[in-house]
Length: 232
Image (spheres, helix red, strand yellow):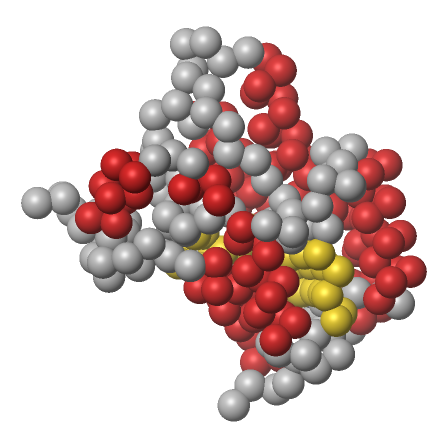
């Protein structure tokens, strides 16, 4: 049995829908005190991240775990991608992750058992997806941040890890259509799309005291999607 997470203070950015909502729900079910934020906080700016940290301090009285999950997934073919489209994706997905962690560092240090959990993706670090090169770059960049931040924060007993979801059934994925969903399901050895609870369970583990010796790592949660050498 893992040590209880009852009363642990958790911030989940992008936590009002999709994977973020699934993460927040799992922590709440485990007895944690959770602040799940949405678009009301702009994590792509230092001021927005600071406001987020202030809200966590006011509502939770500090912080033990931050789940940097806020992100966007807009398609933009490389041939027509605008600078604004590139900036928006990198600013929210990558810069937003870094700024969020920076803003809450004092609270994580004071916790004595701080956890940083970043929602990355298999897209970018492991696989590619035509039309989403900017997204893939942002998600690969998150893993570079995780490794270096883990080294910097180890002296404060703060662990920094990432989760790499595969195809998870969320509102955004459903918008891609039934044909896409069927093709993605067929590519997963376990025979189903992932659920937001699958990602929440992974985050829950990384937040436990028992995971305290795991840092700078990335956990792929994809039903085996990236394993086959070919689709045949």
